[in-house]
Image (cartoon, rainbow, N blue to C red):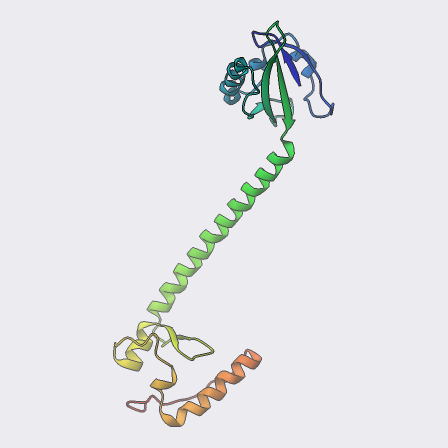
Length: 206
């Protein structure tokens, strides 16, 4: 808590936790409150002093005090004018824990953005390889066996360029190849591995 005169000069201060205030805070007494805060907080101090004239407590505002260690001390202040001499009391709440959480959140967000950017880069390379590959590549849903994605080589091989996404894989195979493919996919789901399998296409039996 800061006790200020009508001109905003600090007359006294008290704190429940001596470790909260930066070294040398005793020198604040006799100085203008606005001179003890960082430049970006000066307009907030001016607003707190102006609002104290209303006779009611001001809105809470975060004010940062510079410290010798280089890390600003964030305090949430509200002011109220008391007594007949125009004295002002500024009540402050320690925001260091909140500032630490905000910093952790910012670092986590930056890390997520870097990871997202890296994933987009990987996906872009995958899309390019998927599109440019001369091998036919299909991405198939394991439950329905519907084709979710197909590269140009696969589309050309299975349908001569006609859309095939959404169709079932088995619809493009010769009847004799359907059961072996179903068995292959069952083993793949069960073990994560499967041997190569030669199949024939439905229309031209390639």
